[in-house]
Length: 352
Image (tube, rainbow, N blue to C red; front, side, top):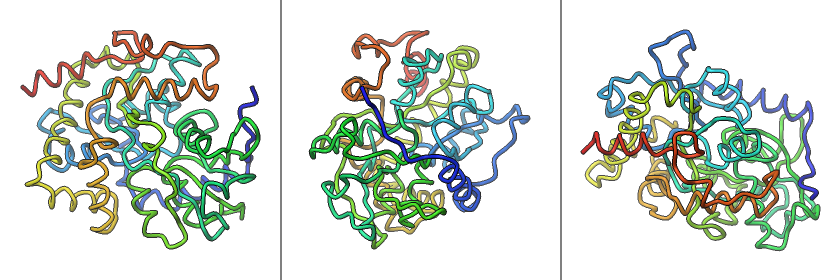
């Protein structure tokens, strides 16, 4: 099967580097080097609300953890850093872990869920002549990588509207992670002048896109796939098994962060924390809160077994595996499986 037609090359790689360099300090605190053995290195695309509150309310500290946030630039960089030991734990879409576990037999493992696709929307740039999904025929769509992340979610949305990647109705433009794609779609072009027509974004970037005059939200992923397993906590099996109490405590702190955020009495505090962490307005932070905490379909919470099955089947539907898989068998938890619920169960027991 012909999978993809790519717009890539050195120009787009350099564009991603320029964007990352110029915006890194705008969105993130400086990270601690790997030499600091007391710091758990966490590589993520974004600040999930549960993570924000685990930090802001001191839940990580109460669990005896010092967590250092690292902004990743792409799923490729993220997993290279995880496998090299630069990162200990990563926040990444379940599909990224599935891809590497099945297709490359890499011993990465999902340890818990974070959200079910919070805020995942297809965003287009109207200044480039795109006002609907139909307008994307013959155009390129910006993605993180050609075979992971939200590529298959994007394919599902476009297929429901009569456009097929395998038939060459559109192509993929490799730009990088969520931050990089948000900046590119907002500008309407890469730094080398290549037009950027559309991309899938999740929180907080899809909410920010709603306030950019040239951007338009044309579809929610949940209209095509629901439930969907979005962000997850992923480690290598070796790290998890060697650091069982650390994993348990990390997940417990994240769960406490979610519980705090979900308490209506804390809403104003949480919105203020989101605004500070993401450097966004109170209005955008409120939208992030609503999508992440109040949205029970797409928001944050425990891993969804059916959502993970749907994520796996979505990849299979669009030819994303080297050999057929059985999703129900693949999600069965175990010490050496794709998903291990040991640390989640221990964390919930610990929290009482």
